Amino acid sequence: MNKVLLYIIGVLGMSALTLTSCEDMFGDFLDKQPSNELTEEQVFSDWETTRQFHFDTYNFLRHGARRINRSWLDAATDLAETSYASAGVRTSFNIGNYYGGGGYNELVATWEHYYRGIRKCNMLLNRIENVPQPVDLSDEKYAIDKLNYSSEARFLRAYFYWEMFLRYGPIPIVTDVLDPEGDLLTGYTTRPTTKEYVVDFVLTELSECEAGLLSYDDGFKSANAGRISMPMARALYSRIMLYMASDRYSSESGITWDEAAYAAKSFMDDYGTNYGLFQDADGKTAYTNSILRTPYSGQNNEVIFYRNDGTIGWGSISDDTPVGEGGNGGLCPSQNLIDMYDMVDGSSPFTTYDETGAPVYNGTSTPAVNAASGYDEATLWTNRDPRLAASVLYQGVEWGDDGIINVILGQRDNPIGNANATPTGYYVRKYIPETILGDNHSGSSYRNWIFIRYAEILLNYAEAMNEINGPSTEVYDALNAIRHRAGITGNVEDRAELTSSQTNMRNFIRKERSVEFAFEEHRFWDVRRWNVATKALSRDIYGVNIAADGTISRKVAQKRVFEDKMYLYPIPEAEVWKTDIENNPGW
Image (cartoon, rainbow, N blue to C red):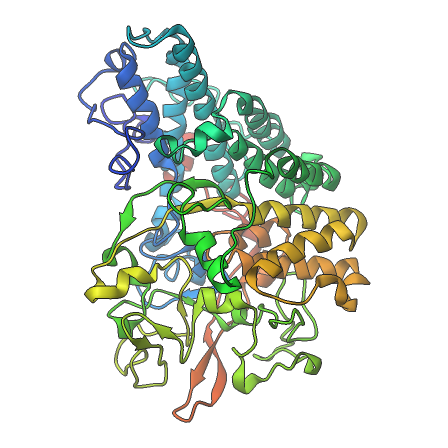
């Protein structure tokens, strides 16, 4: 941790990130004034500047769209490929170049980004009790606000440390406000164990801060939209418990599947009346709106923990829009992802799935077909899980201002000579608000970034319960709820290959997570916690070519590189050189 890492502008820690805040939408929450000319003493001698300082920390919650030099993290998995050659993941993760400049925002800048956010949390926690009470604030309100703000700071700090753990493993836990002009390294070069870092610190912080956070009712108010509330702490706790019970971490963490199941069930029991799966007229629309509609204006009760942003326009989606619409292609789903979607009747199009949740390819680009499903390679998008149409743009789909996706070579969305045209034969639909495309791309829309939604709680529970008892009613009910919401008609318990095998059900749940959470930054971490990342992320990325007569043929769209050492990022080189901190294995 160097001085640049820990020194925040003007000592205060005001964010220097170019992220969108919400001051134009929700009253005074996140309403900030520039305060980089104030000293620390000035900030914490006034309640209003303290409040502004605290709310600024929310800007350290990162948005996933185009974060890595205009590319998405899921384009570093088998779910997608980025079309343009300069994209961050394409010049770093995809070729095994973890020191590549294109991936800097993810591989290196993450370290500085979160340690800066952590320092802000530490400063607030260290100073808030001594901030003078304003004359217009009652004793009760003053006490409640202090408790809320300090609890929010503890949650945010725990979340930032969790995000660091996923990338770098256990790293030094700093809870003091270090002096940027002093010796920053004393006592902070030894790396803790996984148990010390995650179980003893992160999970303990989440448990202890929950009671001091806003209640659901207060947190759901539009004036507080996006602020951390009690359910968010419990939901994040559920996620981390699931990870700690998984293959990669269980022996070090000591967390069991029973404990992970209990964590998910406790959320369902205590907060299940407030949250649920978003419902709409049909499955495709319901699934689409579970992502795009907001809790505060769209009555979306599925979203639990999210980054609250303002409205966006064409400039925010142009990088990920089909070239025929005037976009740059961007995030292009793979045939690997398309192959994970079931049929609309709930049957599987292919015969066998592996431990990564993907169909078994056996050295070919086409898995063995389950003839009983009615799947036909010549019409491979017909009668599929409606989540496919809600997430992916494929040949013949209506899109944009009276447009139809046409990826035949030389046609609208695959013109000859356009280097940004899709390499896979697909474009992304999920997380791209279609309303922006109307009126010559002059529309606008909300697009908050979702960290946790209720579907995850159900899938956490299903996975843990299957690991405890194998296929069971609890597992079926959770999976059916998610699949039926999407418009799938069949029941999981009607598939004999799943009900008779814990292994098959495990692989099915992994497939289901990959489909449900495509492009939401789950797959990248799931394959790591399952200890199957090398298999999942080194396989070929498949795509399709569409001939002029409509004939579909599969192809290898991209070769990928993934070695075991890539389970973790390397500690940034500058930090290793200056501190002699132990780097991650293989780096």
